[in-house]
Length: 288
Image (tube, rainbow, N blue to C red):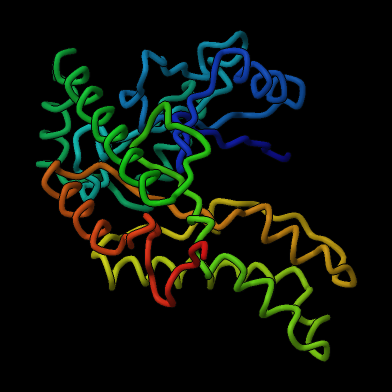
């Protein structure tokens, strides 16, 4: 017997996309037609913006018995280190999950369980305050990043991440392509599936490293959030497809105090030159 599952999370990490009922219906239909279970990560369910509402996949027709809802107190209550979470499923699946959980971790620390119970008993005012606070920080962070050249292709509807494209003025933007095509003797090797993607990752890591060292701002390279389909190693399009598809994205988190976000803004502003270009070494390109 083969068990097929689909893993799904909304609001989504890293883009902050909140999937609509109609979009979820596509997933639900795929599960029903293929007799699949759906494992949903709904850890950001209370963190949505602009009056966008989270919809759980289990509400769609035929999905209550097929859906395993997973969540935790980590994001909603700011206790990511506690590792307190849960799964909600039909009785048969829930029993199987319980048996596996007992053998792997036994149980979560009792004090954390008590604290989680108290947190989950919070009234609606807490969740609304949380939403407003993060929405304000989202808007502040978008204004900050776009003001120094980052491009935000999708304004987050939920979660507390921004998936930002490196400024076009950055000289690091073409590092992957130039390295791969410089030496004809190694051209074929560079045009395999693995090496080009590693080069793109190197670009992102290098940029993130500079942000940490120069501005004290930490971001996460975006390469790990993409899926890259295999292409022919004989085609030069292999590298460009990998490079273009991933668009040099990095992820920022704005789940910080206002003081921390202001300090980040100050650190970044000190690297902006007279033409408004984020000036990371080597110096960024500007129009002459």
